[in-house]
Image (cartoon, rainbow over all chains, first blue to last red):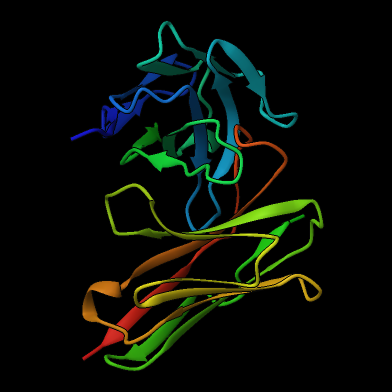
Length: 114
Length: 113
């Protein structure tokens, strides 16, 4: 089945230790998104790639970076995780069809910062 | 400042009855609205959407109503079934199809037997 896959599902890192979260998709969608969802909060868009074009949200901290080496994969890098970065990180994909665009989400990676 | 608001953190409905989930928004530039359903340990799953040029969209047991003047939308589930128990997120988008979504905090729907 075509899908959005996130690895790992659970990630534990230490304060200040760089961490990378992975997302892959078999949908061949040209847009990939990263959202951060803290406990009892709304998912918040961090950035997205439209093909190779990177689009950062204005309030996304510099500590968060992303890479998209090809259509199928997208990575979220947190350079120096703080305790406040503990959250669920959701990857999503979509096609760029105005009016019919639906985003498809992966299961998320829950990040714990010790 | 939250642009998409779901003011009910939880809602309990008896099986077979109608579930009504509400969502308000403040950004008049939003032109496309979506509802997602989320089970524990899974990602959000798309449920139904509506364009701002419409005021109603129906898909089986699910109907979404949009009141642009009030900046309000609602999701109706009739009849409610036990499998509908989940967290429901309202989301909105402005501009072209590649833009990210602005989500509400979600409403936890509990269907009681």
